[in-house]
Image (tube, rainbow, N blue to C red; front, side):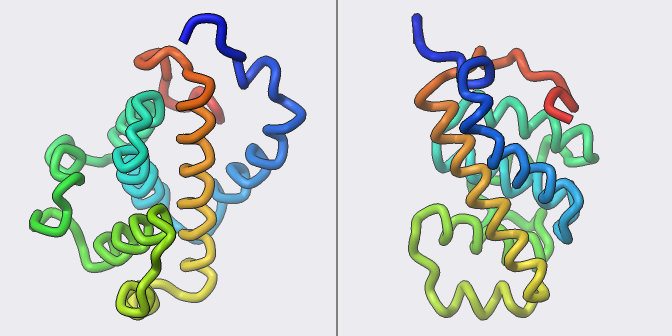
Length: 150
């Protein structure tokens, strides 16, 4: 990790579009608590420690419980999640793995409007992008403060 580029200091020009997407998503149709749950789950899949730290803190600040965060890796077997959350988690995993079966789409369509499903997908794409950037150009894990990026 030593001597890697600080993406936030040296990548401002290139990151502008990603920040714009993030600004849109903050006011989009998917509620913050669900967005944080999805961002945490995708960060688990991608093994991004910085994003796991960030989104666990943001999720708790949004009212998420420790029990639900701890059980997220086994959400299919856990009784803690609503049908809407389960549909979002299945969708997020399918998009992250680049394999969205018709069954997952149909379940998602029962829980989300067209606008919500597009916004959910943009959120999944966004966190996947951030995960990859933070893996390539690591930040100090544990340094994130709630609300740090707006």
